[in-house]
Length: 330
Image (cartoon, rainbow, N blue to C red; front, side):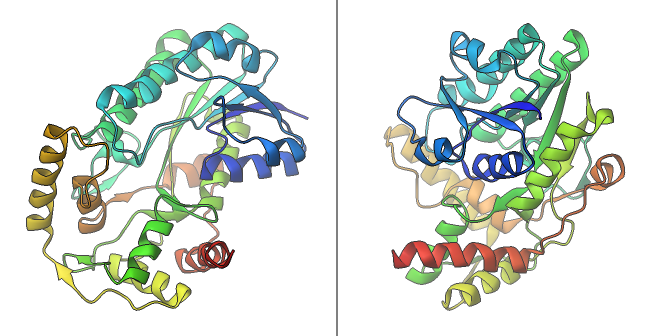
């Protein structure tokens, strides 16, 4: 029985990871922000600690006596200032590294992001591919956080493993799948460019599989792994799969990528100058993700972790759509 701590526990990835850890008999602690709902987790036997990775003192008790820490906490998908992202994704990551070293944790599994490589790069990204993040808060701070954890592993002998997951969907996904499904239902979804570009999307259980393996395989300590699905759907195929699964019409309108990207850059700039708190209707990130092709090799994870994605994206879409439709019916 392993004692573990999960941060970012209320997120999509955190919820699915906790279910797997509990099912195999681990003793699970979760670090929740004050005010976050812990009712269901407590029913399942999760021990709740209140804290914030931005506050080092609040990490001492949750980490004490823990063998493994799964650091999933991060800021994403919000229209917030750069400093807010930095405080969580960089400073918060460093606070967790220090807490783990002080407590003698045997392994820290840190969740980074595929966006550190950049979007639309003309090659398959491997773990040693140089970082070229888009100049926006999420990608920039995830890259800095990733580099910081690497530094702690090299220089301070932190027993860490870094995971760079692809974009994931699954039951409970209100960030990616729900937004796409809502647009399809409203008839406002568009295809960016030709639609033949491959999208780096993966089902959540496959990401969880990679994270768990990274925490279990002894040789993983000190390593970095891309985790995703190497059988990708094109943008058109993904829109069609979601449309069929929720009973909506697929998008017919194609918008050229470059005009959309530069229009989103102008709209973003205007929103920043106006100090609006609402995310613009189109952003550079959205245009990049859907309008370009991003591919990431998972051969290292296959070879060293025995990782093998087991849920096709078509099946993953159906499983997520079932949750989406049930939620809509309630």
